[in-house]
Image (cartoon, rainbow over all chains, first blue to last red; front, side):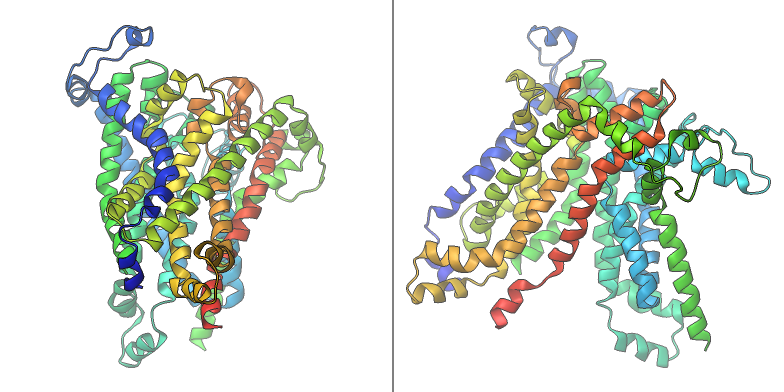
Length: 302
Length: 278
């Protein structure tokens, strides 16, 4: 293998092979990214939409953001939403993986099929079903909760207050994301050797000790990556929030970063500020992704 | 004995969780088959009684459905076609050659793959608008190909690397040209990888909402997810015909679910390792 590699070093072929991919990435991602960096340093509002030149204002947009309480409220909400959702997803996903590991084949396959079906649902279709489930008048959720003695959920409007709105959003995102976590963790669990576990059991380790002493350390790499991906994905919940806002309220109290940027761009037509927020979102994503990318690169070097 | 009881209990728990998890999917199909008069009732119907397809007929009668279907199909086909070609060439480059800039390219691919649509759509909107491609198939397709190519390269890289160069060289010793060896030996072994990446690109393009929302502002140029959202949006102002919305959701979801379940199995088949051992 190495011999062939050496021989091909001066070849032009790999560069030619990369031309289409690099070309489309430069057009679809590269140019917009550069435009965005430049625009984030400009005053680019309504006037510029109608052809006036955009003056460079250096970091004015960023300074304005830093002093904007509404922006900070959105950032805090987004981070809280993302962390809570990612942690709950991870915990449920790992627990389900452990469950798959201990049950007989039939219940395991039933659980896996159910998770696969949920996983495969298109986001927009899933959102319509969940909005229908949480419908205040005839939704199944209110009906079922109302049946619990002492609970009055009749016509309870989940989308009215930001707290319950984000609880609903979080439930939906968790429902969608758990299957990926469960399957990845289960794949990790199947790597844990039965013999080691049996030996530990013979030596008197109880279930908890086996979990925290053997299983958890062995599936830790998988869990770390999955958790990181969840955090990154839960920062980008634009579709879910937009559709819940369609059914509820479009007020800025219900915004997370994605919808906030969208409204800055489409409603206020303030592309300078929208670009600045976008750059911040991209920067956070790249920072978070770095560990994930590093682990993938290691895989490439193998 | 105690262990066996525990196992049975866990099994029961697994089934209960499975039912709870699949419930929204079931609910979608169930509601889509019920007449609206039943859905108007304040007591939900948990077991399907009718099995009437009226809701599907009504959803399909919506003139915009076929326009949206046409839009989705064209965009998806273009995205899948170019994505597979571009990604395949890229994957061959990074797994068959060692060249200067290889690592930079891989890092760039991995970084781009992580970028959220929400972080770029304002700029993509301005770019596409400036070349008058809003509401067009081409504008959205370009962004979709760029968004999907990175992960597809990464996915195919594994498949290409899985076909040993030795196998190709053995064929060349037997008298095939480099191109011939590649087409006859490597390419067939890559088929599962190409199918998997094609399905991946299909799922991404078919389900995509964010970029479509921004780049297809006009009502006449909606993709299926945008069309479906229109139903929900209308529900805020008038009494929603949930049976029809659920029928529409089912129509959008079924091809996705089918493809997803197929690729799940395909991805795990170890075709390449068998070829080398045999």
